Image 1 (tube, rainbow, N blue to C red):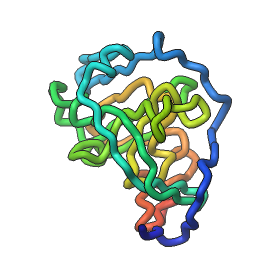
Image 2 (image 1 turned 90 degrees about the vertical axis):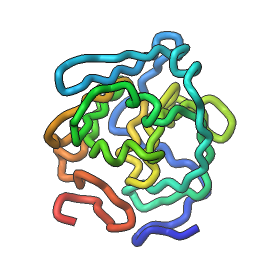
Image 3 (image 1 turned 90 degrees about the horizontal axis):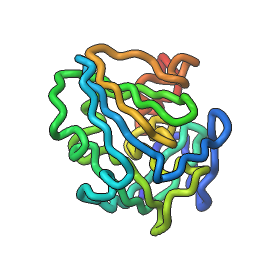
Length: 183
């Protein structure tokens, strides 16, 4: 266990959000991937549960300077969800119930680096932490792990999401302290 620069170890699980907590029932939840040609593929909750599940144990790092070691999740790898999507896009815009967005390079979503997580520490993901499902990209600051995830739009060029438009870094690598544009 090693802390990235500028971080402290947190035993709790702080709740930080850009707005009110959306209440999304699993029965009405869906996740849609759109490619750059506008072709979409949608998974319901039942579809997601029927896919191969991973149980990553990972450290997470918030841009507000806390890190939490050894968090346990269950979810579906983006490698599984994007396996049948025809795309040459280099970037993705992730969208959430409630309107939040964040941009990511596609390379940071593949290769066992990202999941749609629905379980935390053996229990269904609580709404305050993004339940019923959130994106989990543990190698980047946690604002990239969008809560209440509902969509992923593949894009040929990068565009800023919610926090990135307000000056946060486009990538958000905690090991390089990429908190704000220019870091």
